Image 1: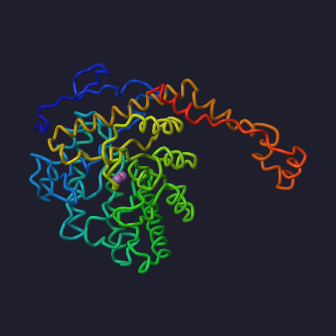
Image 2 (image 1 turned 135 degrees about the vertical axis):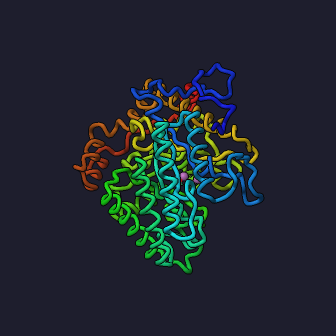
Image 3 (image 1 turned 45 degrees about the vertical axis):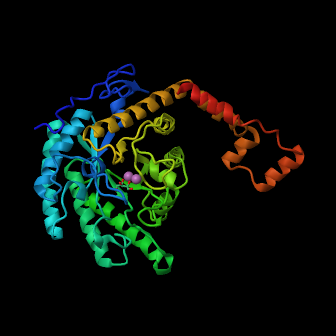
Length: 436
Ligand code: XLS
Ligand code: NI
Ligand code: NI
């Protein structure tokens, strides 16, 4: 059964093509810094947006036409969606996908029934993975949609909700493991607060840490060796999420002895909601060996919330790829399009246009970043900028062999610091534009 009868496998045709259903830059077998684009980018489709999105927003209901979907929460409908998803991903040439438990399988009348539904769907997912070679980048659990999670999940004031969340995550890790998932993600959902007057922040954070340790222990007990990832987001749905940004997440992981087990999954629109650039968040994680994977999308300049649009800005993707290439790629993480078509793009074919655009934007960013790196354009500038630390007093400071008293003596003898040099901010930005 073909659910996308008008679309063939999306070919790479190069920048000159007039075919809108072709890649201009993403050539899976082309190499960048010794890796094929396929292995470097590890593109992934987000099941929740692409196969469960309806186009609804706070002002109106769904607009998206999904002729295969009867709109019900039946297992049968969910099984059909799996087939749709794999046809889509295969035609697109996406090597990976990601899901929440409740995206792929319906909530049952009891936990036991939900588990049972999940087993049935997982079987079909496995069959389709085997048939197509498409793999699971990461799994996660939806601990925010059901009303029971109104106060949060692991940080809920209700201990039973903590227990329910644990049961749900236990199952989600097991299914992720069964499907050969390469990572498991924790995004905070409603782990945050609306009001500090009724919140015991210390207890909530301690509970979250306890929860993550239990997840790590359970993974160990079943032999799941995938990478755990924590996804920062500053706000939405709560006014303050505990996983605010990379810095807050890393502080939490470090304080709770989780750094050896958990890295970060950095999302563009979350970075900007936190008042950072994506490049800042990626670099901040990378220098601490904590950059695990990315959720690729973009916000809207004029809308203040998490619009999760597909990335099309080459300047943005170039910045991302500069950091990703610096760390030699993301594996076992990847570039997951946590992105949705806007409600005006209501036809199934728009899903192809959206993903093709995102993949091409990243492929082009990768080529540009590689060219910048090949010329050493920035490396030389940065190296030269810090050369006063390469020898003399700077080298002693870095080696930790001088004290405040030594530095006072040094400066009293010298009288004044060496003159500063221009940062050449505009020249460097102009230089980057030469490559775009
Ligand atoms: C929501 C998050 C979510 C996570 C997975 O804003 O981005 O989609 O990626 O739970
Ligand atoms: Ni995300
Ligand atoms: Ni988001």
